[in-house]
Amino acid sequence: MKAMILGGGPAGCAAAYALRERGITDITVVEKDKLGGCSYTQKFDGIPYEFGPQIMYTDEERLRSVFEKWLRQTPPPTDDREYHPAVSVDGTLSDPHDFPITIKNVLKLPNPEKVIFELYQLNLDKPDFSNFEAYIVSRMGRTLYETYVENYNKKQWKIHPRDMDAEWARFRTLTLREKPDMFRGRWQGHPGDYNPMWSGMTQDVSVVTGLAEVSEDFQRVTVDGDPVDADLVVSTLPLSRQLGFINTFIVYVVVESEGYVMPSYATSFPNHYDFVRVMEFKQQYHVDSRFSVLDFEFPWVGECDEAKYLAEVAWFCKNVLGREIVEKWVWNKQRIYPVSTRDTLARVQSQLELAAKSKVVPLGRSGVHAYCSKDTCIRMAMTMSENLDALVSGDPGQKRAVLNQMREKLS
Image (tube, rainbow, N blue to C red):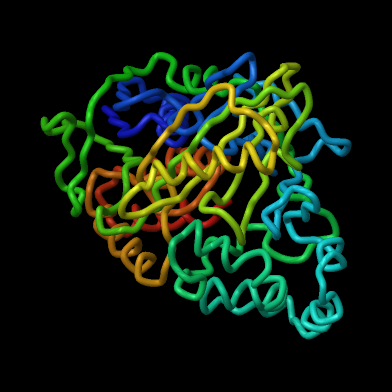
């Protein structure tokens, strides 16, 4: 069998590994940049950083064993060895709140009695899946939703939460919790360098540089304009050009600091600024350094207002952090976060129906149009490999059943 994999990010690399484990030897990965995509690790003064937060986590032993073939998990530098993101509801760093939202958050709010009354009225056994806003309100009440979620989602997704579908939310820690256990006690950490996994997964695989494209009906696949001749095409490219995505402009800055300058490795700002989150990479993977590397993440659609974003970062570093910027660089990537609305999910289903009638197997975040993590990409690749006979059988019904299975657990 001859297999062609379009895209060398986590999903593409995982697909190469899964097919090689199945015994397929003729595999080509087409990648236009670096293997690993957004999870490609770079370093500044020994501090590893990627594109946004890149935590390695899973609750499945078989997925953990894949990570551990090439990586050594290092837990975060916290007392309980778990990651705890923070939220700033007032735009300052003086009183950070927990995320996921906890009882401690409720007691910090000016109207805890109202919040408690709203929580008392909830029926958590029957959440409202009619849209994202309805789902969140049914899980935590309106006050907590308006304080922590509503504006954040408007900034991140550029649409009102009531216009978003609730599909993605059901796999996330979006309810009131006893403690801010973002990954619910799962095995979690950062290896310090993801790149050995990307090179290991593609060992003995042909990796070529090129621009891959897939037609809307999946019947035409090209690399640099030339038709692809393969028995199996695994595509991590967007499932359709008609589906919505959020672009992300990231400003990286270096400041001098022996310690940490942010409340957490990831601090969100739902109610202030154009950036949605600030990462401090030394808290994601601790390195002794007199510097700290931060990233400021600006979601955008339409036009990217780079000058405005850079000015906002400079203001924050000077007036909130009280730090001078030592170095600065940017990374602008398009089509990063798939937008989930009822209309887009209907489009996803129609595209999967077309893919089932072709040689193409959509895979990964863009391929199935779902916000998912590295462990989910590996699970998808394993599902593909385990059901390879059905996927290449020429039977659209069998193939569609496998494609549905690959989309069942999104985390």
